[in-house]
Length: 272
Image 1 (cartoon, rainbow, N blue to C red):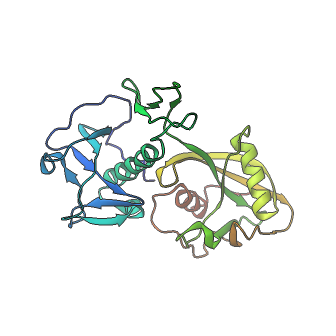
Image 2 (cartoon, rainbow, N blue to C red):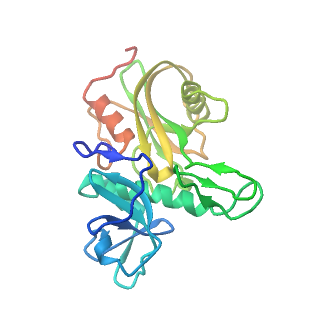
Image 3 (cartoon, rainbow, N blue to C red):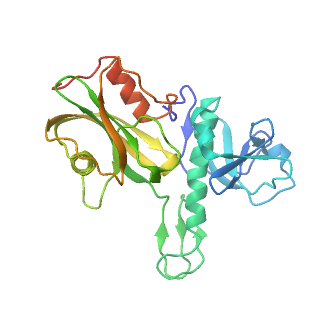
């Protein structure tokens, strides 16, 4: 998965410092990242004429910063390029930087009183100097659900058109609602999107997914009753697939891809 960058160490603790020559600098324009024409990232030594470098985090001894880079001698790529970027740790760093960029962009003004927000010096947060409102980076909890039936098939979905450009196989997924556990979210999302009732929930793994600002929780579960009735606003299709059926899942960056591969390898079955 995209966040699995070992043996590299991701340091997201708040320990800002000034940029040095080999540190990497990100710049974004909406949903696009700004890169050099050879699809590599800018280093601070190439941008010393700029200013306002905002510390983001570090990987090993390399720090990553955010600034605005003029697009004169650069290219602009949709952030989805980071899903399969090599080396993986830089793809992960880029989309995580984009997650923070989006948060900074939407946290310029206080949601309580409208005053311009300012950075907090001792942690990664923004504070309103007028009313004291304190805002941390937004992380949305969500679930990915591998539903199995008694024939040891898995329910594979495709998103409705409103879900953007992703047209590949997926699993049932959704965001947690207020006051809801991730386990109850699994049951509700499955029922709402497919009409199925599920039992025997088994936690699989979690994943930070900066593309949607989410923290994903993966579960396998068993379909106990009900016929499939799709919510057409969410899903275009939902079909049962056997382990040796063809699947259309690009790469291995996502928790969805990891769960489907786990199923295809026979490591999970209905009832256990």
